[in-house]
Every structure is written in structure tokens, then in C-alpha cells.
Image: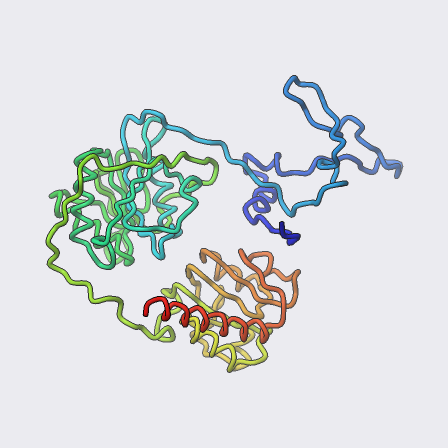
Length: 406
């Protein structure tokens, strides 16, 4: 096994949050302390663990004392398993699954579904095609139904509505939840509502009892209405599930899904210049800071990755990037799925601006900087060497993909 110590950002966050129910379990046991007279005191009763019969055992392997075994950076938190063996009803959720993974909007939606399900219902997630997500259990999914097939590839709203109608006939859910987004959920939800001849609640940001509150009047007013069966929810409609782990039992349709005759032909994605994408809408941002010494190499790497370029305030003030590329509380707040910070130490204003990003990758020489602490993946080293190696790796990957396609 590798000797590299892996950080667990979630465990570290729980250890810092005193209001978290698992906070006490994440605190290291205190074996010694200094008394009022300056004498070191030792807790002789704190060594060991409680056995199955309630008797305190002494661990001589060194695992608990850190002697013979290697220390890990954080304790793996095992969340309690929540089970719904016989659900009284279902709350169906259709996440966007951009890139085959749950987005932050999808997780907010699953949190809202968990609230509506209560203790008697189950959350059923309906996913189209292959996916790469492995954390459905911690997102609050009790049942998972994957509608696989080439007919769902690309832009296929008619076939997807046909599949949702089949799911609706079999499970008869109490509510349908879809993200009111530009990634497909908003259009699919409105098409599905027209197919069911139901009036959906759109841009919902809060649910209270049997009423829901949605945005109206160009986002300047709130519209309160009775809670319908079909809900299109906005971002931050609820807190994502974080305290429980769920079963994610696989489900299947009882009948074969017939293929509908599509009236829409998907001609593929249109190539878009990453530099023309607004920073607030970019999904992949490659951002540079004071640690970047070769800006030509930085631009080459961003072009090779197909990423939208961003910068810290220092880089903008020094004239290396335009003002509209500045990321942070004093610039633009971004919500990218992947944010790569090259040579950015992580000032508080910058960290605030990337707070909503899903995955943060940091490239820096200083292993103790704040950006490294915030990052999900850190690469310690000279940015020039790392960027050159990254370009070579990307080119090799694309060359191999072309050979496989040929």
C-alpha cells in the first residue's frame, strides 16, 4: 500500500464543527495534560477500549497508541445506515447527472426529497444511461432505478419522458422532483408535466407543510401555492443529506420500455470557445495566481484542457489577466464542477468565491497554504514542471482515444 497520507476533508470539517452530532466521536482521547502546579497528569483509565462485555481491554498492538502502526491523517467516519424496508410511498427524483455525477443542485434536490419522504417514504432516484456516481448512499437515495440504453444518449427528451411515464405508472410516486436548471432538468420537467397534463411548481426554493414557495416576477417576488405532485426546485432548495447513509437498493421496471419515435435528431454538441463562457457559468475553470511564472505555458495548458481561464486578484492587479477573469468575493463567485488553482495561496476572499465549487485541485509549492487545505486534490511542486507534464498527459490520452476510435 502507498505510504502517502490521505486527508479526509469531511472528517476534518466534522472535527471543527461543534454542532455536528459526530463531533465528539472525532475528537482524540486526551491521555495526558498539565495540572495547575505544572505537573503532567496521565489518565491511566483512558488507555484501551471497551470490549463487547463492557470490560475495558488494553490494546497492546500499538494501534490505539500510535506506536507500531502508521497514523492516518483522519478517522474514517461511518455514518449510520438508514433503511426503509417497506416504504408506504415514493418520492421520485430525476437528477441532472451532469458528467455522470451528482451536482450540488442534485444533492440539494435529494435533501428536499428526504424531507418530503419523512420516516415512511423512500427516495427513488431515476437515472438515465451510464453514470460514474459512487456516493448515492450518502446523498440520501433509498432506491435507484437506472434506465439504460442508447435511446437515452445525448439530447433525447421525448424518449426520457416516455421512460418517466412508465416509472410513474409502476410506482405511482407521491411527488416528482426535478432540478429547475439549464442542464436539462428544467426542460424535461416541463415536458413531463405537459405529458401528465399537470401544472408543476417551478423555481421552488422552500416547502412548508402543504405549500411551496417559488420565485416569480423575474426573481423579484415569491409565489406561494399548494404543493403539487410535480416540483421543479431551484438551487439551495434544501440542505443536502449529510448525517445518514442509505441503502441504494436497485429497482427495475416490471415491463419492457418501448422505444418511441423521436421527432428530434441530436446532431451532437456544438463546439464552444471556453474563453467565451462567462465565469459564473463555467463548469471547468483553470485559474492562475502569483505563483505562475510562465503565463504562456499557463494559457497553453488551459487550451489543452479546454478549460475557462480565471485568476486571483494579485494576477489581475499585475496585469496578467483581465478584470472580468478575477475569481473571489471581490470579483466573480463561481460554481464550477472542477476548479484548478495554480499558484494561488488562498486568500479568504478567493476561498469565498470558490465555496460552491464541487471539486478543487490545487497546484502549489507551499503545502501549508490555505488553498491546499481547501482542495480535494493537491499537487505539491513547481507549477511549470507540473503544467508541462499535464500537457503531455492530455495529448497522450487524446492520441490513445483516437487510435481506439480508429
